[in-house]
Amino acid sequence: MSKRLILVLAFVLLAGLTCAAYAEVQNVKVSGDITETGIIRDHLNLRDNVVGGTTGTSSLQGTGFGENVNAILSQIRVRVDADLTDNVSTSVRLINERVWGRAGQNDNINEGQDSSIDLDLAYATLKEFLYSPLTLTVGRQELRYGNALVIGNVSTNQFGIGHGTTNRVLPDSIDDLSLRKSFDAVKATLNYDPLVIDVVGAKIFKGDVAQNNDTNLYGVNASYALRKDINLEGYWWQRNRKSDENGTITAAGVANLVDMDKRERLNVVGARAVITRIAGLTLQGEAAYQFGDHLLDSTLYPNEASAALGLDARRKVQAWAIQGMASYALPVAKKYVPMVSGSYTYLSGDKYLNSGRTVHGWDPMFEDQNGGTIFNKIFKATNYQLINGGVSMKPMDDLKLSLDAYYLLLNRKYTDPATGIYLSGNVNDPTYKMTSKRALGLEWQAGLTYDYTEDVQFGLTGGIFMPGAAFSSDNRDAAKQVMGSMKVTF
Image 1 (tube, one colour):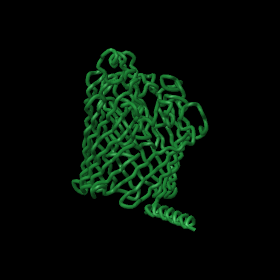
Image 2 (tube, rainbow, N blue to C red; image 1 turned 30 degrees about the horizontal axis):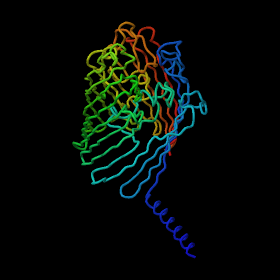
Image 3 (cartoon, helix red, strand yellow; image 1 turned 135 degrees about the vertical axis):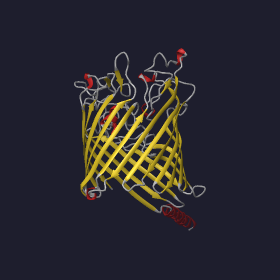
Image 4 (cartoon, rainbow, N blue to C red; image 1 turned 180 degrees about the vertical axis):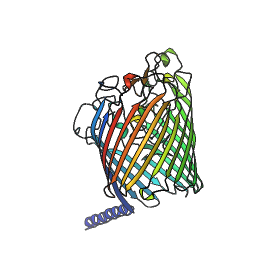
């Protein structure tokens, strides 16, 4: 009899604990999206009869952008948000990105070829942690500040995770379209309305746990609502990294840094203002300055970056960026929601390979701007001026049309003096024959968005990049792209 009683009591206790555990969850929300995108890209290398980068490999089976791209990209995300007791909530999002027709293929290169599901978000939020103004967010989360000139994408949106390596998620030629932008981070938010301060620490890259060869991000971002229509923002960020014993680091597209006893610390300080005092008009301005030090790439500086020869591989950094933006909802024909916009971006540059004693070339760090454009895929976000103008309107409530133009100018000649070759990015990416001119080119982008229902949206964009006088006749073929998409949100 006593044994039965013990079993009954154990069952009641277990049931009580289980019910209590479920009772802690106040609310659960499941959401997500499915996006299918057809992509055609032509002449990303700005020339004919070349199949890849300097190695001549194809766009979907190796490194290099490739001359032509024709693929369908599937991107699926499922998210679960749960509200718990005592101001505690959790968020988890899973993601799958792959190219149609490559499921199950095994060529020792993980580039969107299977149906593997990865962790995109996984964080807990603790509101009123220790005291009421403080919110703590811990785990894999998105970090985006301002217009993402400095912080927005863990790998920058020119390249995807693992670009140029056998660990890439998507083919190099389309990895700029990846939705993976999250950081492994701890964020403390202090809300002293109208002042909000974020203190962030993130782990960007971690190699062998037994070695001190990681890349970290630290920073503070403060936003202050001066008044209802004026918002001010200031920030400091530091990317802190060190190469491993073999002189190699794979974080955010950086490779082959020479081995150094000290860590590389790149700081950026900046300020941003947003003004909306005039109805329909939004003005934004941002300025940032980079300082600290930079380690040379040993593959590009074999005679300067050799620690074995006792040569100095460290350079001081003095770089800057300026950006202004404006958008205006025209007060005429309001039924069609006409909008005009414009922006100007200045990213400081340097001579060939930053070979001086001081580096003046702007480091993109973790930027997330101009996604989906051709020039953003071809050029690293540094050493140019970008002038953008655009118009949009809605001829119907569920249909939006847009047209944008982007004009780019080099700030400093970034070519090999002996060969005239411009290095576009990683070692295996395409190179371009240049002249002494500064005009990089002009890109046109036209777009159409159709809201089929509240949950389903169709999109169609087309673009053409026309190389400017900075390119020699060997690289004057226009690059083109067409992308059609369907997105279902649930």
